[in-house]
Image (cartoon, rainbow, N blue to C red; front, side):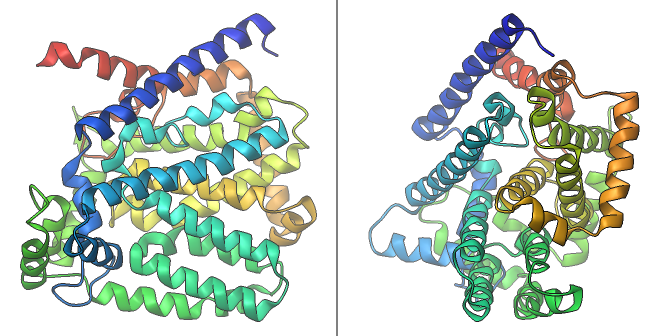
Length: 401
């Protein structure tokens, strides 16, 4: 266990780091220093016809025509949705007497300060919708109402950002196992999957891009990521593959990514336990392990051929998993996860504990030195997006000018 003095030092450092992240967020808001190329993704709309993830951009465009600043509205939506999720997660940590400082990891709430508005776009909005669906499951017992309303909300999520199906829908499938067997639990989400497949068919093209860019050029400086709509699907997949599995200074990108992902899973499963041994039993670590591994497995398309944004993929995976975990009791979790899976997870945790027993110092080391790169084509690596790496990056910026 950590001494009270060392725990005080750690918490003080984390408090100062919180202030540091808040300053970064305020700076982004006041000076518009966020990644505008990435943020432009929010303004994809239906001016060239129906297209995947075009709903939010269409609504923002109508706000622009009504005389409102769409960029300001998009920033407010991003920040407000972050506040909602942060409030929920923090309140759950306080209620369970977990160590709040753990939330500052770059792949949890701390990522909002590390990666900024351009790195998140719709992600916290999707988490808010997921939280709303989970709340629907908890508040009502009428299955027609719950699954009908949930599918409608998933429709909305898919129209806003179709990769929701790679993390949100799998977690909702797990929630459905409280009511149905595996086959029926998949069947109730078929309407949402069909909408996803329809969205995939409308991926863009040169003509669609030109219409969209013409509609937003009055308030955007450049098309940014919107220009990806011009590329054929095969070219986009090739770009993601070569970036995710390329090299950085002769080091395989995949190796850097695996270090981040393995550290993420270890931190996610053991962080709370290391700081509070009263946290239930090892079985709850099994639940966390099974949940995060299941979600990351479902996110494989995003981690390989559909995205290079590892930070965003990891953040929705971890926060979505926490929302799922916090919404269920022990009996419900036992019903969802097959006993054989729980036994396998228990054996794996016991094996890892025998090699690297979780302790506050190991968790702090991961917190300080390991992050998740914002995108695999950057030069950050896992060190650059860790807490110390982020501090060094920001403080050294004036010397690079």
